[in-house]
Length: 280
Image (cartoon, rainbow, N blue to C red; front, side, top):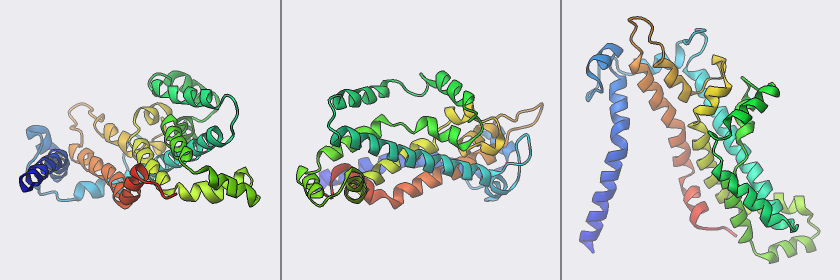
């Protein structure tokens, strides 16, 4: 038994090493100047620049307009991540609530239509989505970044399964007490769904935070660039003999990882409980 535990820990430690090593190398490389990185590649020791690259990307204005810094991109990423997660949760909960509790004849058909949209990723529907957003005048807006992506078949599926496991006696008791559909949803379903909401929030926040294709397509104003896009923007400034700021790109990559990691750490217990347990 002890040997089995030791082997399990070895496997876990190997996985941790495999996952953490690229992050450590990116951090070490960010402490060197761009010329050194360009000449010798990834660095395996702390450089003489220290954390100056982090201060530079957060405070110094850059880009073509020289008006955007890392704090602006961090704000945009936060708005996209929270808007994406909250929007998906609200839409998914309402859709699942309608499918489960408003027992209309086509409920199952509607659910499977929604579920089949998983076969249509963003890359497949990106042209019609962009055309609609452009016609609505939502290019270079936060609503254009968030609204077209908040419909979620995954969230609807998880909330539907959760609502199906809620005892029918709870619904009957609410009806006896005179609770209407909206009051039942707000006062009963939402509170008992908090762990599921936390789990879906983490998944959707990380997914929204890491979005690259859609923000790249829908924003041309640097004031709406996200951190993920900012990394690519730094590496595209090769003009003549100018060397891209690899140290700043590495620093921005490290900064871009911190908010999702913090969200996972804060909601870790709720995330696990939401996926494997219920509080009903």
